[in-house]
Image 1 (cartoon, one colour):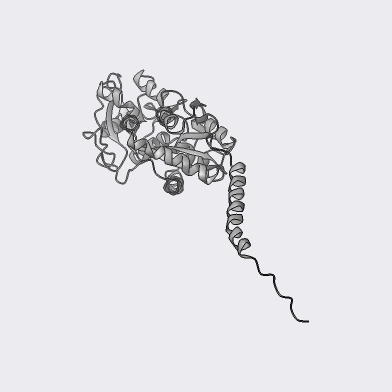
Image 2 (cartoon, rainbow, N blue to C red; image 1 turned 90 degrees about the vertical axis):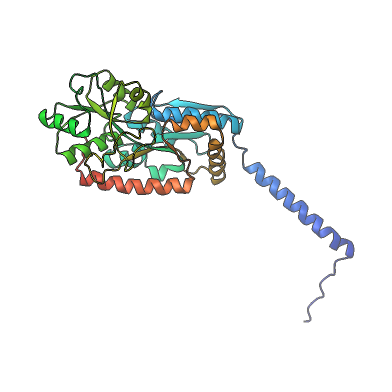
Length: 338
């Protein structure tokens, strides 16, 4: 059977086809927009697992101010202090993945806690998308020059000599078992072959108050303590990074103090719940990275460390690398928790 001839469209019909195609495309776009809610559509929460006055709280409030101006929505900081930051992390892990809840935390809660605690309520690589590493910084080994026991301590060597003369009697504080300040000090103990006693506090700020109040002898503090150092209330013996810290150029590194290869730093960063839409993640990061362009915001962030504001991919790579590195340190230094 011969094939039937196809109908030939008229000239008018040919002219209508492009218009019909445009209308179909327009309706399709409208439908897609209707299915994708506008963001942000309500106030944004930044949840941190650390108390008011902590470094993480400080960057949270600074960036909340910046995001309010950029996004036109209220941005509220909520403190869920406890368990070395784990309470706040676990809450955000359970939050809706809609871009309206952000986690502000430190490196301990993401790269260390999962390796030293059995029951956390979250798994970082499963429950979160890294957003940006805001700042990175060294720890600062400090003592109270007004305390009777540490009045004559002017160097790392002095502190270790004191610890050797009083086994187990010299106390150091941290923001909780398993955080980087705890692990870092245990590294010092192991390298120096001394025994000191760890006194865990609810936060690094509380531990700092413990040194100031002569409750404990020493700690690995953060750049939050710079005003105390400038006022002479605390004395810096060393910084823990491989190079000297820009704000304390006269203070030696632990490497210079006789501990080869000693290089410990921490970061403060933002993450969002897993399954947050990629477009929202990118929009959030686009708003955050412009913090560099605001001199007032930048100045506030710089008080907490070196401003990084890395992109999500670079931040994710940093987390993977640090998690592996700290796993090796925990095994090599035989660090265990009570």
